[in-house]
Length: 233
Image (tube, rainbow, N blue to C red; front, side):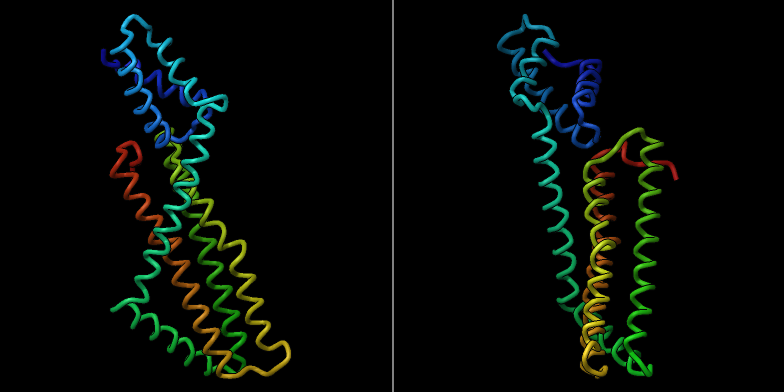
């Protein structure tokens, strides 16, 4: 026996009722349950859809789908971190490594034009934080618009959003503390400018990869896999 479209819809409803609110994970569970139910029907064709579904759900244990959700979140977190690292490494291979070191050198030269380079880097830091916050606000609004239009949420997108919030909370203050420590007990030197320029470029590249490149790759992957992910422009 094969499941009907009505049965498939029932499975989606079933996953939602058991606290799986993300469509990408719902689809995986529905596919798993559908295959398991059809296999069970081959052995016990007299069982009803509800009976077989209950049997299959019990195989997930007393916590139901919660363990699946947790494991999937961990998997996607690792996948997202690996994507960031892979794209980040590209900036230290030819030809991008030339641009990386050139940017560090230019930033160093510009900072030395200022009487107190420390304030130049602090200004860059404020501008960077503003750009990051603006990007996160824009991304959050776009995700909300998609959820409103499609009526669906996406676990991979939510994992990415949660991980992308980390730099905003921790990196800026850490960079500020590093720069401050340079001049705590000694005057600013060219070495401090070079270290600061390097730090800003390295962190800037990481932020660009994490907030711009990888989220676009995630969106492309979801859009390619799920037609429901697309929204009207």
